[in-house]
Length: 215
Ligand SMILES: [Zn+2]
Image (cartoon, rainbow, N blue to C red; front, side, top):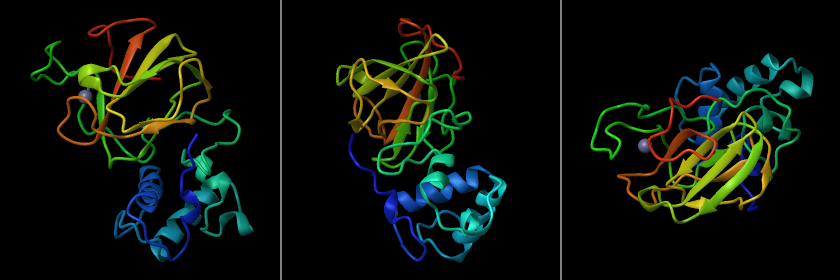
């Protein structure tokens, strides 16, 4: 696995990718950053991080507004490419810190006549993570209009498809835990911009056998 650079998410730093993802993860958990996800780790972000840490039940140096590995893990952000445990809570989003930008079921010029997954618009390179424990059923560049894609065969009997990736960071047969990074958002295949197309099919199901994604 490649190393991700959350180690430089530090007070006073500026970064348009990792710090923005960190800020969006805090905001998505209800912690206000008045200026929004600017990429500057200033006092507002420090205060939001401290509030998040207190909400975990931490205090003292554990709630100083400066993220360590535990804070990043709780935010579903990787630290050094690894997450501790795997026994944590539900994964909020397959693209931590990002919400659905285009919903399942929308009508449009799709072969199935409707949008067969949820889209998460995010910058190229944004991490995508396993939504549940499972095994990688495939990971290749043979997705056609789906480009680079990874299939997570999850412990609930569902196949979760991660499409249009710029990078794949798992291989067929790999066992993964919820929250483990699978790859990066991209725009391979047929897209108009970088996003994750995330699809939920029954185990072994084909195109059009999808459901509104849940996990
Ligand atoms: Zn889509």
